[in-house]
Image (cartoon, rainbow, N blue to C red; front, side, top):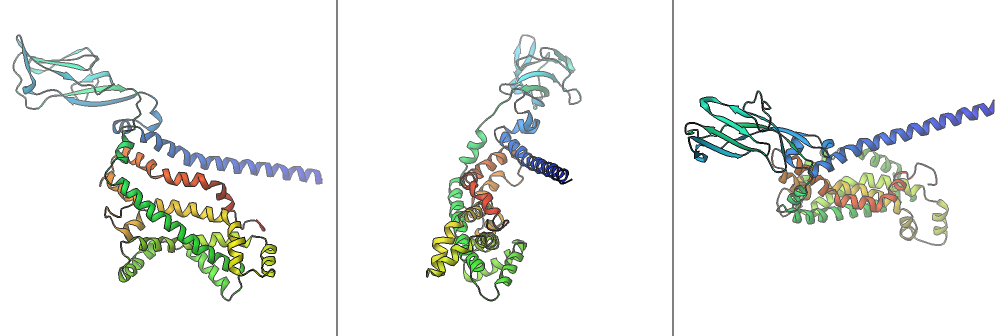
Length: 382
C-alpha cells in the first residue's frame, strides 16, 4: 500500500512539474512572439507594414494602389496621335495586373490595352511603362488614375533605425535619461539597504508596524501622489530639476526596495550576525562587512527593476522635468518623433528597440542574481 501511495504521489508530482513547465513555456511564447513581431517590423518600411503582417516579411507582398498618369502638360505628339507616357511601378516591384476603375482594379493583364472614352487607349507593359494615346489633344489638368496590383519582393531596411538615431535631440535625450536613471537607481538602494537591515536585525518599538506600512505602500498607485508631490516641489523650488525627479523616483521605489531587501536579510544566517556582535562589531560594521556583501543578489535584482522602471518612465519625467529639450528624456523624445497621431508604425517599432538597448544590457549583466533575489525569504535560511 505504501509503495502504491508513493507511486501515486510521484505520478502527481511529475504531472505538476509538466504543468508548471507548460505554463512557463506558454508565458515565454506570449512575451516572445509580440517582441519578435516588433523586431521584424522595425526593419520593414511603411508600405510593407500597412499591406501585410510581420509574419509575411520573408515572402513577397501583394498590394493594390493607384498611380496618376501625366497631365496635358506632359503630352507629346507622335504623328496623328497625342501620347502621355510614364511608369507605374515602385522600385523592385513586379506588375501583376492593372485597371482603370476602382471597381475593377485588376481587369487587365500586363501588356493588354484598354479602350477608353473619346478614342483614347491605354497600354501598361510588364515593366510598368504605360502609354496613353488619344486622337485629339489632352486637355485635362489632372491625370487619370491607373490602378496597379504589384508584387514586391521581401525587403529589410535599416532606414528606420537611422531616422531614429540621427533625429535631432536624441543624443541629448540619451544623456538626460542616463542622468536621471543612474542616481534614481543608486539612491533608493542606499537608503533601502540601511532601512532593511534595521527592520531585519535591530530591535526597536514599532518595527512590525513599519513593516506593515511598507507592505501597504506597495499597492498605492504612484499617480495618487503626483499632484501633491508636484505642489511640494514647486513650493521648495525643486520643480523641473534633476534633484526633484531623483527624489520622486526614490520615494516611489523605496517600498519595494525595503521589502525585497528586508526579506533577503532576514534569511541570512543568524549565527554569523550574533558571532560578529559577540566579537564586538558595531551595527554599522556588521552591515557593511557582512550583511551588505551577502545581500548582493537582492541588491542586483532590485537594481534591475528600478533601472528598467526609471529608464522606460514617461509620466514621472513629464511631470517633474517637463518637455524642454534641455531636460527631455528618451521616452519623451521618441514620443515627439512619432508625432501627435502616432501613425508611423515603423518608427515606433525601431524606437522601441533603440530605447531598450541599455536596459537589455543591464538585465543580461545582472540576470544571474535576479532569481536569487526574488526568491529571497521564500525558504527559511535561503
